[in-house]
Length: 429
Image 1 (spheres, rainbow, N blue to C red):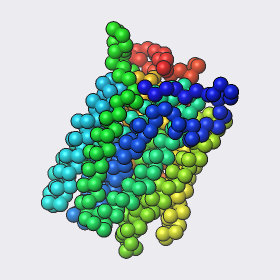
Image 2 (tube, rainbow, N blue to C red; image 1 turned 90 degrees about the horizontal axis):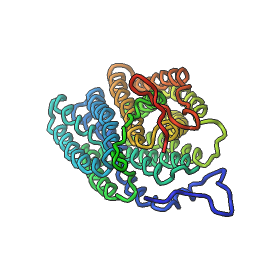
Image 3 (cartoon, rainbow, N blue to C red; image 1 turned 120 degrees about the vertical axis):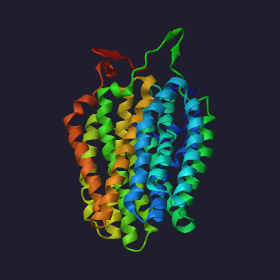
Image 4 (spheres, helix red, strand yellow; image 1 turned 180 degrees about the vertical axis):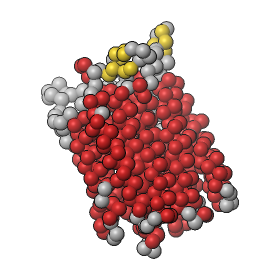
C-alpha cells in the first residue's frame, strides 16, 4: 500500500494543496496510467452505439433506445460490482467483467451490422452495459487508501474529474472520427479492444488496490450498504440530473450536426462541452475552498441548471459551442463536490460501492436522456432533445435543495447510516 501523504517537518499542511504534490504521492502513477487507459473506452461506448445503430436503422429513436438499454444495465449492475470489489478485491471483479464486456460489445456490433431486430440488439446491450468496468470508482477508492486523512483528497477528487473529462474530450472525438471516416462499427470495435487491454493492465496493479474488508482478524465485518446512507441517496438524484446533460447532449448534438450537413462537427462540439468541464475541474482542484461542500454543491448545481436551460434555444454552431462550454464548466464543480462528500458520508469499506452508485446514476440519467432525446429528435424539431438536460437538472435541483440537510456528516465528521429498525453510527476509517 502506498504511504499517506504528510506535510514536511518544516512546514504546516499547505492551505492550497496542489496537483504537483498529489502526483508525487508514492505509488500513484502505478494505477493512474493504466486507469486512464482502461476508462477511456467508457467515453466512447454510448456515442459509438448511437452512431452505429442510427446508421443501420436510420432512426435516432432506435439508436437511443439501444444505448439506453446499455446505460440502464450498467446503472443497475455497477453498484453490485462495487460491492463485490469492496468485499473480494478489485482484481477478482475486473478480470471476468473485462472479458465479458469485450465479447458482448463485439456481439452487439455484429448484430447491428447484420440488421438484426431491435430486440436482439437489446439482448446484447444488457451484458455489454452490465459488464462495463468501473475503473473510475476503483481509482477513486485507491486514492482514498493512498491519501488516508490527507488534505489532498479534494485535490484528488478534482484530478479524477479532470481525468474523466479528458476522456470525454478524447473519447467522443475518437469514436466519431472512427465511425464517420473509417467504418460505422469502428467505434465499438475500438472500445472493446481498449477495454480489454487497458482493463487487464489496471487489474494487474495489485499493490495499490484497497484491502479486502470481508474479514478483520478472525471476526467477520458487517457490510453496510452505501445506499443506506441518506446523503448518498440525495447524491444519486443529483448525479441522475448530471447524466441527463450528458445523454441529452450526445443525441441532440449528433442530430443538430447532421441537420446542417456537418456530422463530423458532433465530436468537436461535444469535445468543447467536455473541455469546459475539464478546465473547470482544474480550477476547482487548485482552489482552497472556504465554503462547506454542501453549500458549494447547491450553488454549483443551480448554475448548471440555469446554463442547461438555454441549450434548446441555440440554433447556430458558435452559440451552441459557447453554451456547451458554459454547461461543461458548471458540471465539474458539482461532480467534484459530490465525490468529495462521499469521503465524509460513507464508511471506508463501502466507498467503492458508493462511487459506483454515483457513476451508475450518471449512466442511468444518461440512458433515460438518450431515450427521451432520441424520441424528441425523431418526432419534434431538430434541437428538441436539448429540453432533456433542462428538465433533468431542474428536477434534480429541486430535490437537492429540499433534502440538502441529509448531506451533512454525523458528529465529528463521522457518518450515520440507517440500520434495520434503528440507527447505527458507523465510524469512517
